[in-house]
Image (cartoon, rainbow, N blue to C red; front, top):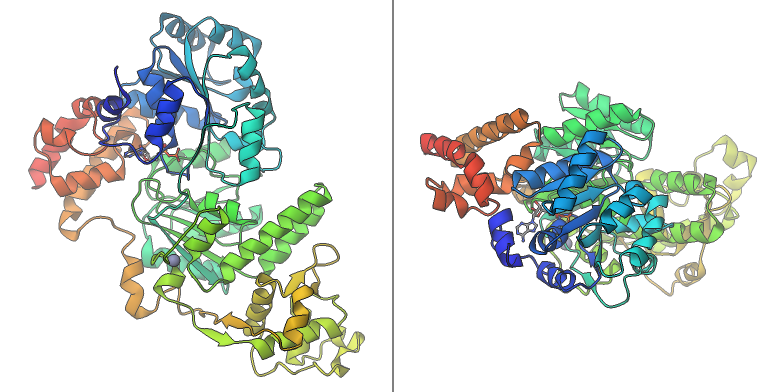
Length: 605
Ligand code: ADP
Ligand code: ZN
């Protein structure tokens, strides 16, 4: 096969490269190492698959998740690419066949689990054949700071010495500079080729709400926008995962659970169903998601706040990989801060690590409390320069009202100060509201001048004030101790009346989708990407896709992704040339499925 553009068209059926794909492919094809940073769904796979096919020899892909290799290889085979995988699930006979194919030079891509790759036998095998590149997927797994750390990834260091002339391309969606440097160092990539694409995911719509009754809010969101669609719901604990999944089931939503406390078999079964079917809601802890490249996940919902913007972005990035409109939806509250703090305190990490994590959490809270464009806050966090507000997040669509909270802020700070900076939010709020609780009497705080000064607003508003004070850095939650609220450097200026404080108004329970009625339509047409007159055809094409997928035991998207089906509904191809012109249809798929799809189109047009 000749050049990259031709392979893109004739194998993958795509018209043009996305930004940076071509540059990365050129670098790797000319034998250089590269680091590719792209958001989830950005199109990383093409960056190593195309050069591996173009160049003579076989490309070796290191991928951490055994359970997903089969899908990756199935997807390539359905495109007519010769691909295999090697991991502990492959039997001896198949291993021998793979070795033969490697020796005969007929294999384009070989996926290998990291622990398998570093075995002596595998290394010797690879040294005896022609390898054209090593792609190290999910390369942030080398980072000992991250929660995806894998011991085996550290041993990939040896590739540099053992295969000095084979280019290495590391790929990840984790953007922070420390991790980036760690990848470059550990995999010896050299400083030159770092390709960092924009981290914007324009098709994802962000929406963050105060937590009132999380489950009810979630149900209203699903009912309002995503009934029958595939989605992921993240919760912070195993217990909450189980409870939420069975609660959704009881409300008629097809939901499954996934967390590290389940047996690996049970996890696999659920993961399989999520991938294969197209309307499952997966309720999960963060144990779920890495490497899941299901393209048609229509929403990612957080019932609890993630511990950092990195986590938030990585998790929400699992929505809408097909480029179609998708929602990132979250509810959050102070209890999340307390929960994360507690877990951090219980962890065995050192103090430096805890401090960094704590700072990250505060930035995350800042994102929740901001009144301006959320997308821009995230992109700036990743070091991108941004200009206009995006127009596609809750704050842009429905700008929050603000109020002058200088006086309320002063009351809160003074209550924190006078109670000795020893108590958490609930206690401070009780003092502000003038509640005569046993504890307050015990500490004699009912005699303070601040006792009851804040009774003109309610507990929810106070909670919102305290959160925003923390997000603004005017108050802080002490990591040690019991999560007591403490004053900061900035508190004094507020108390002295030298700075004014603007707060965002709580949106309240009514605004479920983050939208008021007038704006509702803008947010609510996410469920169906299809025009109403195309509905029948769409459903028929989906049914055909499903039956073909079942027949071959592959996920539906391996046959065609939603994007290709939507294009078929719109363009209604009736001959081979027209069918080939659909983005995502290459000659192999055209030959395998073209007739069947076109006959459905003909019938219903
Ligand atoms: P990542 O690994 O970065 O999360 P993928 O490689 O899975 O993303 O790509 C995401 C989706 O975008 C896939 O469905 C892929 O086929 C599609 N894609 C990648 N490159 C292109 C392109 N140049 N044109 C159209 N679609 C593309
Ligand atoms: Zn915005």
